[in-house]
Image (cartoon, rainbow, N blue to C red; front, side, top):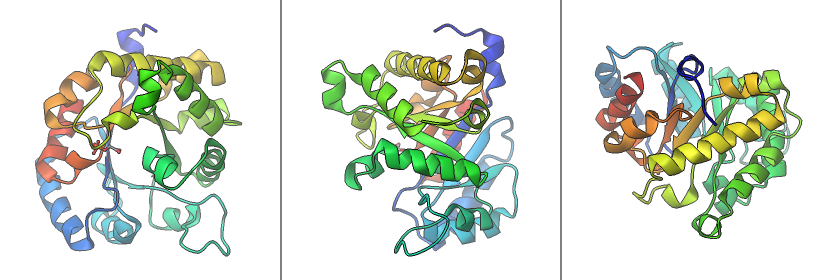
Length: 262
Ligand code: PGA
C-alpha cells in the first residue's frame, strides 16, 4: 500500500519502553533522571514508559503529569473489580494517570496462554476506561517459514479488535512484533517490517475504513536499537517502536527517541 508523504506525516511517532519484568523502583528513579536530560531538546515524538506494576506509582509521581513522557502499563485484566487474585484493573491504572496499556504481547500469548478472545475483552475494557491499548501482533518463526505471516496477522487483528468502532480504532496503537525478533538481536529487515506494516494497515482498513486506518499508528518491535532505529522508523508505514532490551539504558532509549524525531 502506498501512502502520500502528507498522510504519513500526520501520524506522530510513538516510542515506547517495555521494561517487562525488569527495573526496580530505585533503578527507575535513576533511569528517569538521566533519560530526562538526554531528551531535553527532543520534540514532536510521543514517548512512553511501561514499567512493571510495582514502579507505576513512583514513576507517575516523578513524571508529575509530564506531557513529554507518558506512562504505560504492560497488561491489565478486563473485569472492573472482584475476586481475580494477582490481576490489575483499568481503573487502578487510570488512578495512576496511566495513558496506554500494552495488550496481547507475544510473551503474554505464549507464556501465559492469552487468546485473541481474551485480548479482545481487554481491548474493550481498556477503551471503555479511556486507556489506549497498544495491541501487539506478530508471527512466530515457524509461521514465517511456512509463509503464513500475513494470515497470522489477519487472524490476530480480527480476533483482538472484534467489535471495535472506527472511533475507538483511532485511540488504539498496533505493535507489529515478529516473535522471532524479540530479544534475539535479530530484527526484521526494513523491507520485511514495512511489508508487514502495510498488511496490518490493509487489515485495519477492512475492519474500519481507509481514512481511519491511515491515522492509526503502527509500531515495530523486536530488537530495536540505536543502530537500526533510523532505517526502521524511516519506512512509510512504521510509526514508532516498542522497545524492550534497549529501553532500559537511558542513553540508548534516548537515541531511539531521537531517531524518531528526525
Ligand atoms: P526487544 O523486546 O526490544 O528486547 O526485542 C521488544 C518487545 O518485546 O516489546
